[in-house]
Length: 224
Image (cartoon, rainbow, N blue to C red; front, side, top):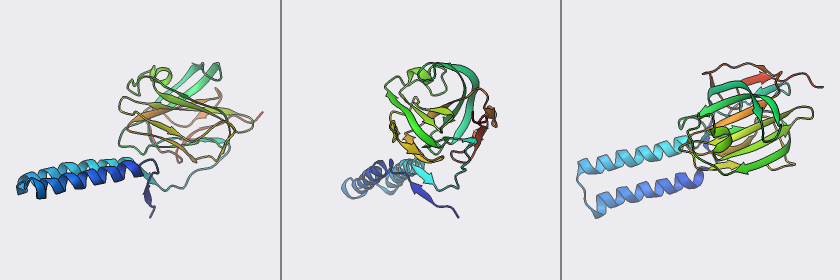
């Protein structure tokens, strides 16, 4: 049986929420002396909020797929974009974009799609358009990280959504990362874009539900 942990980004808010919930219920029962019906309503509402916060920051243990010829999924969610686009920030040429939308119910840990060295890492302040909006990739709060495996570069972009207001990432230029390793977290609904070589063989379809570190997004072109 696989274990589920609370992600390190969630401990502070989970503990804070727990203390607030405890305080509200203690005040309701022992200071305001609310009746049974009111006390139960307050308990159910506050416990539901605490349960959602704890569930949101879960980090289940997984058997991560590692294969240097494969691109693994960087996040849990649903595939919402598969198309050829012009990528202006780093590559300045055409790439194959694959995007995964994460609802608040999904695991929000972000994982490296390939292993390699970080060649580019940049945070952009921005808007909070809904994550599936076409312009969210270039106008929303976001980070762009390029990983080089020695022959191929892959850009992975964390994008804040309408609800998400904080992107966390741990990679800087010059860092090395293993395939499937945790490189960041986006709080409360968001999206991750990948920009791959045009000749990448895509193994997923639009609308498909995927899992970070497990689903194989595509097969990389042969080296050289």
